[in-house]
Image (cartoon, rainbow, N blue to C red; front, top):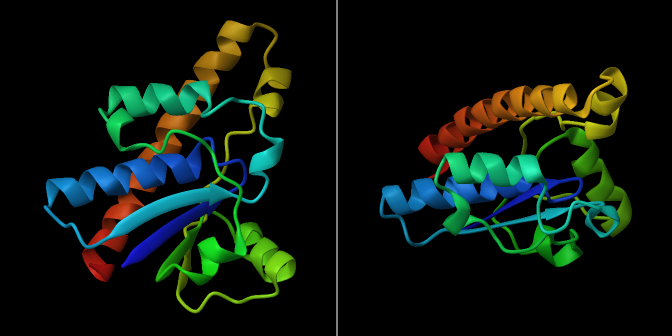
Length: 157
C-alpha cells in the first residue's frame, strides 16, 4: 500500500505526517506500506529542506530519522500511483483536480491548517514573541495531525 500526504510547501504538515506515520509503522512492525509526501507549491518555498519549526517538532518527538530529506513538488504520478492520498486541506485536492485533470479514487482531507508565519510575524512586534506563537501553533497542529493519522492507521491498515 502507498500513502501520500499533500500540503502546500512540503516543509511542515505533510512532512510531519509522513515522518509520524513512518514511525508508527515501524513501531507496529508494518513493512508493506510506503509513505511519501509533497507540496502543491513546493517550488516556491523559502524555508530550505524543512521549516525550523518542523525540525523542532521532529527533533523533540524523535522523528528526524523518519523524515524525507527534501521537499518535493506534487506531481500527477504522486496522486495516480498512491492507494490513499491524504490532503491537508480541500484546496490541495482542488489543485490536483485542476492541475492534473484527475480525481483521486481513494483520498482523505484532514482539514489541518497551516501556520502562516508571515501573518504571525505581523501580529507581533518582537521576533521572539512571534517565534513563541509559532511554536504554540505548530505544537497544536502536530497534536491534531497525530490524532488523525492514528485514526487512519487504525482504519486503513
